[in-house]
Length: 546
Image (cartoon, rainbow, N blue to C red; front, side, top):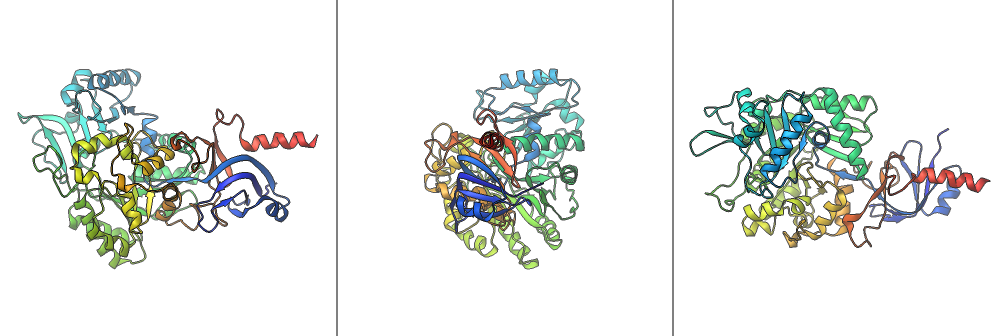
């Protein structure tokens, strides 16, 4: 027979401003918090609840990564070669060769994660590099940012791409000085190759989602937004949900305009369940900052007046977004550079005239100009930002951004000071490190992995960072009344960690011991905590009864 659970002897950090700390919490059989406060009053009020001693451990609400490509995280843990951190093109070739030998049945060799800033050669590989190692199978490598790709000759041949191929709006097909293709594609031109890669089956997508889900739970992430999905991926998610196989809570964004074509994808049905929501559509307004393709308002360093790329013409953006809003969908737009943000705000003002009750969001927001703050406030636009980019990609920014932009890039402080809703996220697997505590530490210090400080005046506090990673994400999901803090009536999604973030010496070293969703433990680190807390409790109860 199921009973309420009384968790006690804990240091509970609730992220509820009305009741910030507690020592005990009662969880009902429906997985929601019935009461929170001191142990004795709760024990007297709920005498039949199962008592679970948390041994004075720290409890926090589960983290909400507001922008992480869940299935792509899973792809790198299953069927794709992970090249993140690879130090040279020569080592890249060796890894490709070994991966091809280990995956002889693969029709394409797919890899991701190169960053020319850490390659010894200080350049991306070209088709000639790839042809040298694997000439008889198509290869496609995605740069770490996912805004640039490299194809070998066979991949281009099978995709019917040559030097006469028309370049799609918002993309580039790079060439050697002699006019021959060098195999490098940017932004919407990636679709010229990717649209010819054999599609994944539903079972393959579900394996990727499952692998990623288990990994995210081990990091204390209980909710995640997967911000770009085609119809096949949406079908995989909904099938998992209907079979009860989603442990976490997912917010999945259907794409409207895929790369490499002028196709407009149809709107799916709105979908909302306990573990899955499909209520927001996704657009891309510009490129990436580390790849120097985001549409900024000044030239990038060491370029001939290159200011990046806009990926969407205004009329097409407005048309397709208006249709989505008319059907009840929110809109999320990848907009990093100044020009992309301007475009986004112009469209969002028109969307507000269609439906004033739907709020919209901007993904990334590399820069916030003073002139745009009133529009953010009036339209109640929320922002999902990634301080972790500072940690891993600082060298890219230092080598491409003018100094004045380095001081204000990823403006977390400015966003909060303007009373704009901020949610923290990682955009994994754009970065390798998707641990929330490393991301939070970076938001506080603005320090890179090499110790450089980028945008020191954009630091935020620990309180603000934790709030943005919990309640901020819940607000962006329009679920602040049901999750995001440990409050009465909300779902009991929480984590148990090994140190107090407010008193520890190194926040990045914080370890998740357990992850609970709906009041049920879904992850336990057996190395850090040899037995789950609940199991320890059962033994303690048995011993005390003898």
